[in-house]
Image (cartoon, rainbow, N blue to C red; front, side, top):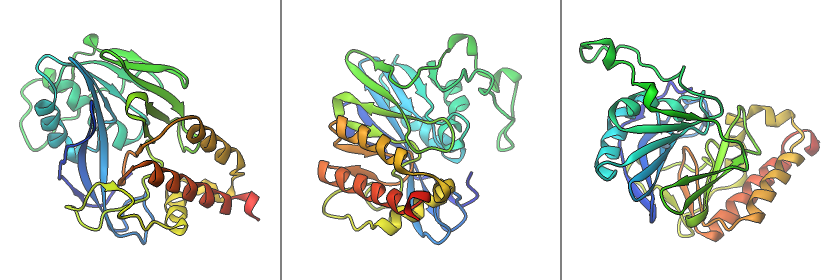
Length: 287
């Protein structure tokens, strides 16, 4: 949930061949529930477009205020005639699901991946900023969309040879998917690892070794804002789950659903260790 001010600054960014970050920027001013109340700055709200030939997959769809920018970016980025799939990492939260219906109405969406079939969720409400001529304008034809419910351990393929490995999120509030994009060594972490803010909307979306001053206290504050139950949890199994994911894969980029993107093996390792240390300091095991 967010009640803060959102900035509709769409900013496509190519992260690797066949991987583009799109989305807007949110102002962090104490009114957004997934950031610490005292945090100030700006954070990207990230969606990731995986493409191969005439096939593409959008990982999460962004908040509704960024609807027009997200759709315009997709229309300008996708090849003519491309099929588009949607992958919803947390179907019941708005930064994941928020623009699904609008995208399905505007673009040739042929499949949606989620924890449960999302056909009953894919609907519109009348908008007050423009007239609605007919009910057909409000609902997409869901008969043309395949609703898929993969499980952790499955692989989603995009086009020829692009593979996304589904992982269960070790730390979560609701059922949450992480994705490991094998060919680009990118780990998409949904609502985890989004703890680095921008100082200004025009600042780089990337954290690299030249600009990385995040502390364990920063990470701990962010984790408790999003996952307040960590203060009362046994965090040892969570740390073990994270360790397994990061030790078994080569990860060059951590791409969260919000917050700056972590780029480079050393940066990724450092932020994994920051999260691990923060988890070690919290919960019942720390007492």
